[in-house]
View 1 (cartoon, rainbow, N blue to C red):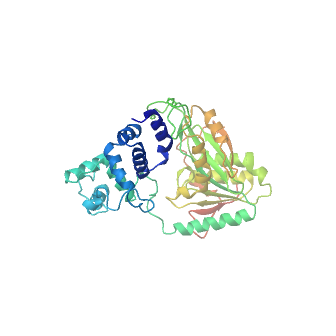
View 2: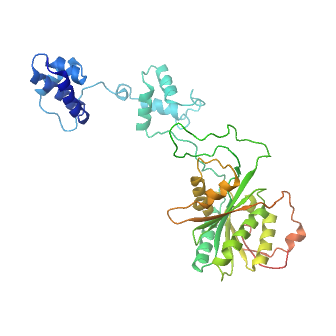
View 3: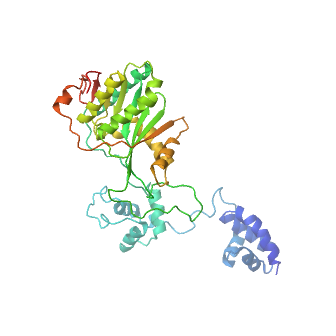
Length: 401
């Protein structure tokens, strides 16, 4: 018998570079050259069965196949779809019963794993494996997907008109070199060794250990990051509150940005333009928001123009996707152990387009339940725009609050 060690070495060099047909023909050619006992020797060296090599000896004497083919046309078992043309529609009906008009389908309220789907098809007499189900789903343009936050409630009829109104005002202000900022409160964060979504590169098998549960009592400290994004300069300013996310805190954060950065960068400014959400601590219905803005306008001596995004469109606010999204990416997978960690991670946030972020910690108290009286509102010098004055207005400097 031929030297198996030498034959195995030869096979090992060429085998990884061959497709299925080329391997059969290579093995058959080697067996033919070895003569008597060649089929057995090659079978031991490469792992192909004697039957496969014997059939391949006959293939050597046949005309070459068309480029790209590994078998003669019609060879192999027919596909399941060929045997059962309704298989794809059956599978689609199980995966998405509502779109197929069958809301009472047995899998309507069941987790639709590939094994469950395969078992359901098997019950109808269709032999199929869960791997084949996954393959067919991919062919039908299905994929594993999670939920996506897109439904934000009913659209206001003037939603798009308000977007255009804001865009025009912002464009004109930027053209004049006026300060334009986008503001909002980021999601509050727990301080401590709690899970923070996302992943980091770490040594295999050494995930960071955090608390199992992340619903602590009220004694656990929270952080309230209020962001101010400067549209003209691509810079961010984040004020980390430690008490409550109130309208007083929101305006104090804007005031902090003006004191630390705005008044230096915009010495000749004649107004400040603010874009904000329609709800939350900077919502257009908040009396305290407008009262505190009046106090700020009096202090800085500039009118403050405010434009609110319509209800249910908060994600359109620039601060969301130009500042907050990058902060979340920068601290992903990092437990926010203390306030210093939050400040350092936010201040280290950068982007390829040159975003720079300043962060400060605010330990002042902002009690809940502050009621602004009618007398206090009467001194708010608010001038509504002609278009949706409840969303768009200017607060001019006036009497002291």
